[in-house]
Length: 136
Image (tube, rainbow, N blue to C red; front, side, top):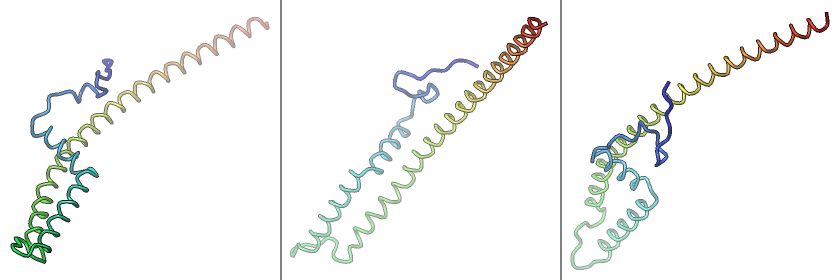
């Protein structure tokens, strides 16, 4: 088995392949959508939307029960879900590659340990033989 090392950015070399624009974008969007920053920005947006539509006397573009806001949030969820799933699929692929690599390393380590155990058993047997010869 070839020796594999980590790259300069800490990633496994198999992950260093060039990502497409859509893959990079999905990862970045999923990172933002899964953050507290997104939650805070969304809560502020909703508070401003509701406040303006309740307080404005002249023009209310989305009066209570805020059907337009509901539509906007539904569209956001409809777009957000597949993007996050794309990013999760890429993470699952990375996890599968890592698990396979770890399995290969563990199997090699197991073979090496078995070889060392055989060598130790041979050394013990040689010591027993030498000890028996010295006693006789």
